[in-house]
Amino acid sequence: SGKYDITEDMKAQLEDFVGGYSDEKKTAETIKGVYDKEGYIMDTHTAVAAGVYNAYKANSGDNTPTVIASTASPYKFTRSVMNAIDSKYDSMSDFALVDELSKLSGVKVPNAIEEIRTAPVLHDIVCESEKMQDTVEKIVKNWVNK
Image 1 (cartoon, helix red, strand yellow):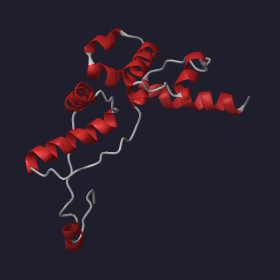
Image 2 (cartoon, one colour):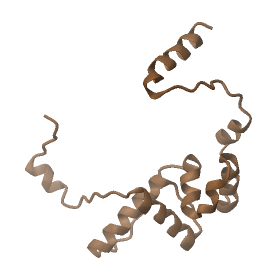
Image 3 (tube, helix red, strand yellow):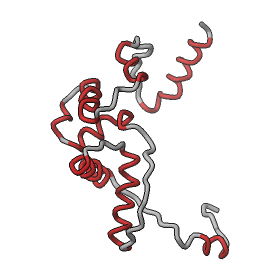
């Protein structure tokens, strides 16, 4: 029916549950704020959690010590993370951003990203969105028939 119903008992168990969201602007502000204050570079997913938590604290006055577990690596979202820190990074190439992130964070570039630097290009096909299904099917068919 397009909805999910919960019982009154379930609702009672959710009294301490709080939900929220963070748009791209707020997420970027959170990344920059934490970086400027702490020197820590967080990924966009963790920034959403931190932004929602900060809004919750401001609205509720609840200052219970809280742990936010990082859910991803900033290397997965390098451009978004670096642009949040400073718009000057927008003009840099992807691998230059990776290197800059490593310098700023002091965290070694993950091996999976290092391997991409020299990996051969396997597919350079460009297609319109309405042709994506056919294009992927052709690639898979060619791969299977090798």
